[in-house]
Each structure stands twice: as structure tokens, then as C-alpha cells.
Image (tube, rainbow, N blue to C red):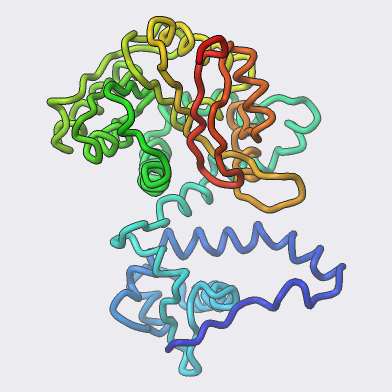
Length: 349
């Protein structure tokens, strides 16, 4: 089973059909979510299976599952053989839970109520400028995660998977080893800082985050074998930060916030750099690409808007935000992807 049957090429369809195809996104994403939740890709890891076997293994209704798998195969997620068996394709390999780079948790998260119900109220945000999440659930996003441990655990797993992928990309593309002392502000459980220190034995690090998060970070840094070169400080990026670092890192922090709050966070970094000539701020975020071109950051921007009132930013928006906090961009990051924005206080060399 080597061939892959995919959807018809959109460019070959009449405009009105292409328009309707765009509205099928909800249907397709729900199909993807169901096969991920059932663990179909894991069941097919050892080879193709027929629908009755898959239904029995996943406690599913045979006819209903078969109709869902038929749609999934039409979009190249599985291969459908003439004898009725289904097998993995390159796409569904990434849905397996036991492979490096697995996307199963991210698929489950993207299909969870916490995501799709907010998108169902996109019009509320467009009309009011207020996060749809609060309109739907009656409270903020992080409060929701605390009140719903299952969703909170799924969010953590999905973000950890994303962090692993983006961390490798960022470390491959930027020399963090230039800096002797690195402070990761809002560093979460410490995965990014641990990877930086593992790659650069001459560097030391500090992680700053909320007390409950910082406690977990200490365990991860110890397990990574870098605890002797790292310290964990309970803190808040809206308050004064530990001084003395050569570089302060903000990874996937500022996109959670509107410009007003982001400038406050940047102001704290600016203060911490005051006694470090040559010190740098390294912002690790998705850099939105040029107008009229596809990049995933433009969709992620809607996630930020709906959940928090935050945003993904293009280079012009970053430069304006940095200037408002007395900082300036000194490198040329590549747009349309995750990037490291190297910044310095605007009045220094």
C-alpha cells in the first residue's frame, strides 16, 4: 500500500466550488480530531486493518467509523485499499503517539471545546474587540485550564510538543552560545533553557516564572543534567527581574498580550539591561510574513485574539512595539516562521 489518494487540486475547481471547499474546514478538522481521539494511527502502526477490526479495537460503531475513515482517506490521511483495509500514510504517521515529533496532542487540542467554541464566536471579537473565549466560557483562558484539569493537561502536552519542535528550529538558527549568562523570562517548565545549556556548556542560566511553574522547572533542569548551571527564581515578568544576565529570553510570551501589556513586560527587560552594556533581549516568536502570502502565523494570530486579546506580529509591528519600550531590533529575522528577534536598548551600541 504505497499510493496516497488526496483531495482534488483546488486550482482545478470552479471558483464557486473552491469557495465552498473553504467552508469544509470544520468538517475536516472534526474528522481529524475523532481519528486522533480514537488512536486509529496507533492501531495501524503494525500494518493495514479493516474497519470491523478497528471498530472493535477502539470501541466504535463499525458503519459510522467506516464513513469517517472514508473521508479521512479522501484527504490523504489514510490509504484506503480495494479490500476495505486502511493503512497509514506520511500524514497519519505524525498522528501516532509513539513517534518523535508526534502531532496527536496538538490535533486533540485544536479540536477541543476550548478551541472550536471560541472560533464559533469569532464574530463577537470582530464586532467588539473582546476575546471570544471569555464571552463563551465566562472567564479567562488560564482560569479555565485551572478549573478543567483534563483540558489543562492536554494544553500542557500540546504546548510541550510544539516547544520541542520550535526549540530545535530556534537553536539551529541562532547562536545562543554567544552569551555567558542567559535568563529565560516566563520560561515555563524549563525545556527551552535546558536545551540551550545542553548545547552550550560554557553558558549558565536563570529561569523566571510563577512559583508553581518554577517548582516543576527545577525538576526538569535536574533531569536534563544542567541543574548545576541553572537557577530557578519565582517571579513575575510584570515586576522587577533578576539583573546581571547577558541575554534575556522571552519565548512565546509576548503574543499572549496586547500592545499595552507587552510594552510593560518589555519595560522590565529594559530595566534589567540597564547595567549590562552589550546586553540583549532575545524574543522568540512567530514572525508574521508579508501581505497576501500564506503562513501559519496569520492563523495563530486569530488564536491569540480569541483567547487573550493578544496577537502575532509582523516586523513593522515588532519595531513599533520595541520602540515604545525603548528597545530596537538589531538583526534581520526571516518572516513567515519562528524567529529570534535580537534586541538592545535603543540608546546603546
